[in-house]
Image 1 (cartoon, one colour):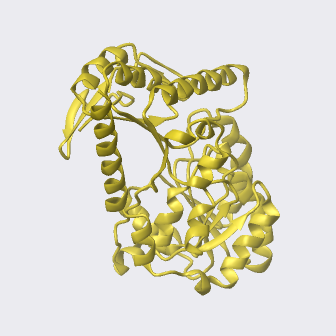
Image 2: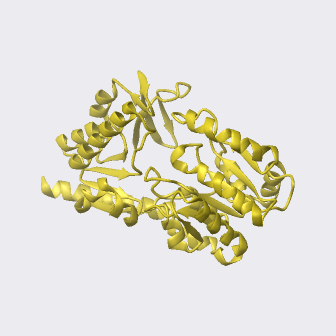
Image 3: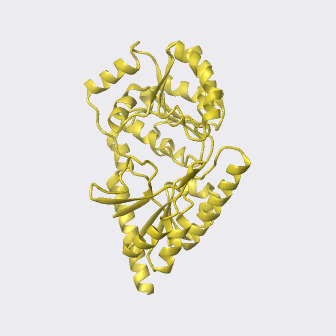
Length: 356
């Protein structure tokens, strides 16, 4: 396996082998909003597409169309995995970038042999995926969680929630507009009316989030008031072991996302594997972990009062939402996802060989 990606972090080597996977990082000349410009990417794509049996592309990605075209020209089966829509912050320049990426996504879809979505729900509501119904395959994402010891969970609690037993609402995301952080912020006063000692633990990047500086400036003064009262705590970016200790310290996780830049919300499954229910927005795909497992509630999109009601319902009746860990792990296992992808790759190869 060869992964061709951007050299987004210059502290990483340009080429290395990780766990048997060769990683090639194309030099980045400069950035445009959240994207990167890589002048040598096309040359590298020709080189490594020639070596490959099959090509796996991940969208949204501006460069995917060129790689998919190379796959078509070299008769290499090409599969797209469509993770979410792209919706950059408002502004004329970002609008042009959005349009350019959408055009390239559609070209990639035209040149590809198949496309994968996490859920049928998201595929049915995605303008991009609806144009590719004949190529569509639904494969759930893999989710793995480190099993944390009781002592590790307790140590994390002493660090993050030193006041002891109190209702804890968790959120794991970037401090970004599409994540709906302000919806949780507006819902919090209603939650505090019933649970005055409740607190929010926020795991994820909250400083210097690319293209989200204005959004953070607007929210941080209000959040700061709760921080002073020790009812909101930013934990920063946590590694997988720390996340495994984070989830068990929650009473409920919330995913109040606002648009289709969120197509599933993997953190919901991670929380469920840790025995924690989720409250998710009623977005296509995002609502599926709750609907498939029954382990949580769905809240109206962008509705602070609706989010508060859903969170309170879970806090009031938490035990009724818990499901066996094995049931969640079986539904979203890495082995199942890998087997589904491998079977699809082999079928595409067979069809391509018979066609030639």
